[in-house]
Length: 132
Image 1 (cartoon, helix red, strand yellow):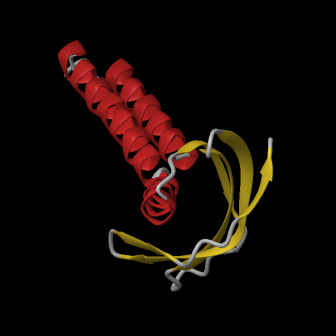
Image 2 (tube, rainbow, N blue to C red):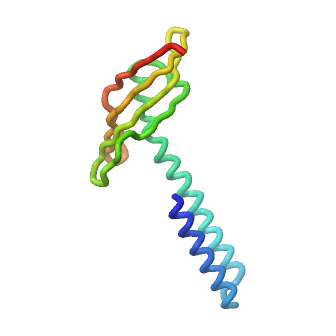
Image 3 (tube, rainbow, N blue to C red):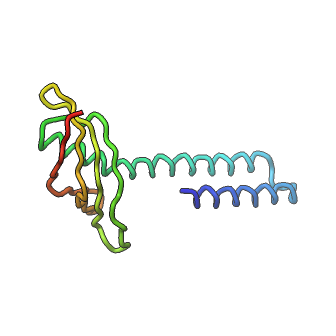
């Protein structure tokens, strides 16, 4: 994401320099290019945010399906280094749930996550819970 923004800023600088050097490049053209660059930045931000939330949303859905309990708060991080050709990753999750009127802090460590095209497949959830 940072590389994309940096590249777009360099392109913007080049366009601005061309605008200052050549008078045929009008302000209207400059505004159009600026609008296109802004649209690319906003679009890429929303796309990367959507991609980042795929795994936690899949985990919440699987947990709700398996345990019939909604996760109140969730924190996760990737515990494996992903190989470029691999579709497998390992994640650890920490979350807060309410079961039988009590609040629990639960952890799932090293959950294998497989990604096949746009489908996310999670292994069986083995949680360890402590009362809050």
